[in-house]
Length: 258
Image (cartoon, rainbow, N blue to C red):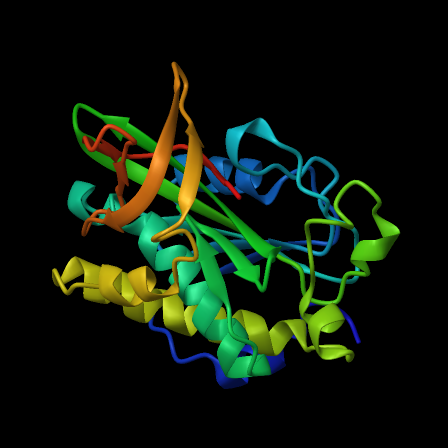
């Protein structure tokens, strides 16, 4: 069956805008790059760029993202949020992914701050958010999502010990169309709730696997260590240092410490 089976996606989609315009490539360097071109050319909010394979997929902090064909979901959403909602995209995106996984598979998904999605102790999805701002106004935001659906992680040695897929966890194949439709539905619902000022961070907070645990946070200019004590409504991490002081961290690379 070709990917995507649009009739299967559309028959399950309940969104008003998200996914109603779909740009598809069988193979592309990065959906993020194509989505940027689409957004700059005036693509409407809700446009998604979907690919079966990425030859130059990337994740946060410039890392590469393994993107073999015929197995996973590689999608970028084009959004035009307010500045206030922009701050909550790192909450909305992983929460939507987690809810879609649970709805379609029954698997419990957790979130490693700020927006990696894990099943157990292994990563199943990554999210890359990039935005274009001019004079404090958001021109567009791109939410790239890579979700390992049917990939054989053992076939990729560099990630075999740290990654998983829905198929690996269930022992059977999972419909990418079903998961994608659920993901778009949950994302639009949460995105609109964030726009209304609803506390979407509460459900996200419940899934965070770092809270109460000692962590190391890599920042551009330093490393912070301490206990991940809490998060605020914008998704910032509240870290309690060994000396008792509390520091607020907007973004960083978290490593769980023993």
